[in-house]
Length: 135
Image (tube, rainbow, N blue to C red; front, side, top):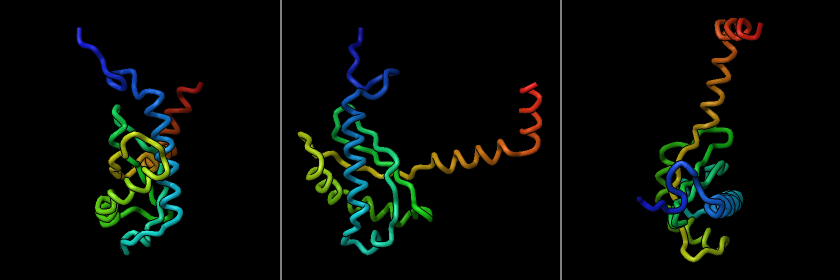
């Protein structure tokens, strides 16, 4: 019988993964709030860190970011990938871990999806079907 490692399978992330990911999210949010970047491409970036997911060994973190007021462009993601070692150093200073995690940035499309679903639910044909089910 194969032995399962923590964070693997249908159980989902461990309590420690969730706690560390939340600490990293707070640290990244503080870094973006300070906005003292050397890269001019990041000077104009206004984002919020909506979620951070940690790998089971806590050596890799995926930060989901969403733009405030405007979308995050592919050029911003290129600049974020280029500045990832600097973010890693800043997170290591803020969060006490055995290893400094590699930070990977990804666009958070959950809000866009929720807005699209809300728009679909307000269509007349969907409203009509929902009223039929409610009777």
